[in-house]
Image 1 (cartoon, rainbow, N blue to C red):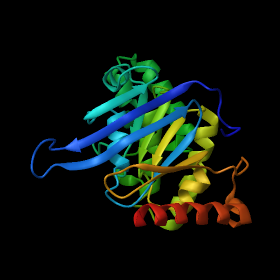
Image 2 (tube, rainbow, N blue to C red):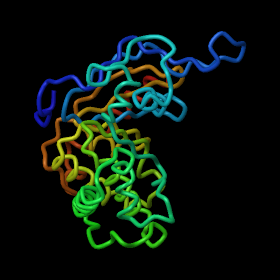
Image 3 (cartoon, helix red, strand yellow):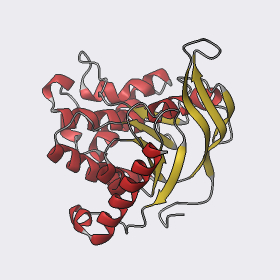
Image 4 (tube, helix red, strand yellow):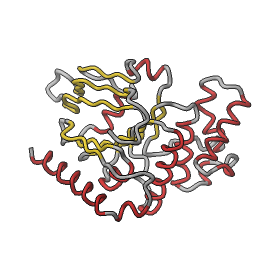
Length: 265
């Protein structure tokens, strides 16, 4: 287990999880098959695999946006529905999904409004989060006045506003240009190390997965199975030069080979 993990507390436990869309019908689709995975407090886990392998489906099962067909899934020892009701996690999607008619600060305050924080608490907390993502001066701007990368930083600030122990991220940087994406990778690592939040991150990029993660979960083509879990064992803090190290390239090639092997099974 990575040295960065804060303790051995189990945050996610999946045992024999299967997801079938249209179960029992002629056109049923087996999306996930026999998923077994434990994720501990403070880990940064990336899910990687070919398109349609069930990465986002697994994330949505954890978020209680979908229900497992069979198997057991626990978040902080609870079923996904209870974890959702207890607001145990924040979620960031590929699109920032901000409300254009609300200022940046009011967008970050939204989950706090739902949770009935006082107006003063909401404002203080939102400002703290915006400063953490280095957007403290943009509280009164509107989303349409920001770049794509800045909008995603607002989405991350919003997801972390109520201090969830778990952050679920579904290809949050997929639509960004390469330079902005690399900067956002650095920003996300800084936030992760500051907040000590457990992160589950879906990506199609092998270098991104290796650079960010403590472990990389490799998935097969549909039906999605976990074929390998790779410990990245790269030292922290990770910097731009990390991407140029021989060990980084070794890990990228290891995951690429595992993905190729899974595709040929």
